[in-house]
Length: 242
Image (cartoon, rainbow, N blue to C red):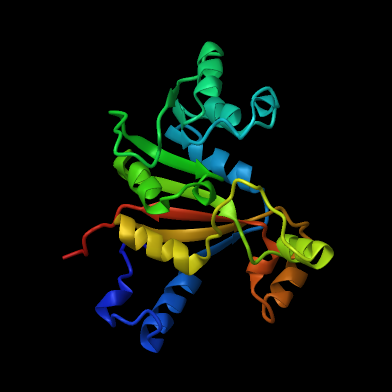
């Protein structure tokens, strides 16, 4: 869906029941479940043959760069054009010496790289920043017409985190995280950044024989419990036809 859902047209009360029903219908309509691949493969499929901007490429520590599973390296290998940005200056310099087109840029700033991309990927970054709406606006600024802005972030409702809480009495996560994001928050952030939440993807490989059992279980509890991450897909809103 490429239209922004603006619940404030119904009410200025964020707890208005009619507005909440409207949001719920939209979120259920845009939920997409993928059980035949992992999240990285979904992103690689989206990036293949495309011009890609990858935001937050340094992956927290230099030791990941030489890992064959390093996500930016894999995106770089399949994209026709791949530019990365990060704020870790020393790691950016290191990547540049290895032949990657990576820029030291604050992706919550007003900076413009002067290029437009078919896919902008923000992988495990939004939960680290002070101003997530500014991050989305930076991504939007670099989208080509018809482009996709993909935002991956941990799913706080997954059993992965519930198990940690049950085991430890407190949920211990990456110590640099400052926020969780739900589907309604993703929708609202998009509205504030001028973006339509086109879809949110739940992606995890599940054995074919288990899939019917999962679908049955999802009649009684939300499928979000099964998936450790959200992948929010935003697009620039399109005018109504006619």
